[in-house]
Amino acid sequence: MSISTPEEVAQEAVRSVLSSTARPPRPDALVTSLTFWWRAMLKIKHVPEQLFDVTAFPVMFLLMFTYLFGGALAGSTGAYLQEVLPGILAMTVAMITMYTGLTLNRDIQKGVHDRFRSLPIWRPSTLVGPLLADGVRYTLAAAVILVLGLILGFRPGAGPMGVVASVGLLLVFAFALSWVWTMLGIVMRSENALMGLSMMILFPLTFISNVFVPPETLPRWLEAFVDVNPITHLVTAMRGLVHGHSVTGEIGIVLVVSAGLVAVFGPLTMYVYRKKA
Image (cartoon, rainbow, N blue to C red; front, side, top):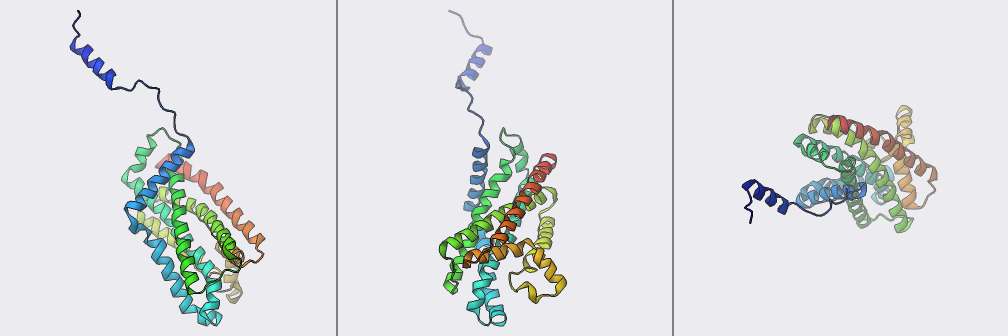
């Protein structure tokens, strides 16, 4: 009867704890993207205060602008509400897209993405997953505004299907716009710098548009900017869908702009992510 040496005993102990089954298959792009989507959703679950921007802000915007400007601009708050609600919906969701980049910048500064880069996963999933999770936040913001609007007297002429189509178009545009802030979240060296740059871009885009007043009431030089502003086309398309007007051309413009943003900033984001993150 042979006696095992200490080295042989150690090797046998190592073999006993190692799995003898086949290595599991590498997760595909969909699985890893959904995993990071769920990670982002869990962050919302454990830190619900981050939903403040998609709950309180929409309520403040809708109440403030409807009752401050409604009587002066449309003769009554009820009439103004029918036109301004789709605009405030577009403006609010467009502005909260910047938090996509802020969250990414925060994770990069903490070194979280350095750990992700070492995993055998589809590399873009670490960005795509959180972008999909942000779609939940955008939908929640839209729901808050629509419910409050219905309480205040908003009545969509096209019914529920028009509202769903309008919100769907908004989500497509918001997803595309989020890629801009995702890239900037990687490039910018601090959260405060990214916040400042985002506001410098978003404030002119959202306020210098047709959200609150018709473009023809503006000075000619300002009207020219409003006419080419993608937010203007988005708001016009959403109003048409909600109230049952023909806005096929505006919808096409929004879809083309959205596709262009993804086509440009998607690859560009992945390039800077590989180089810098």
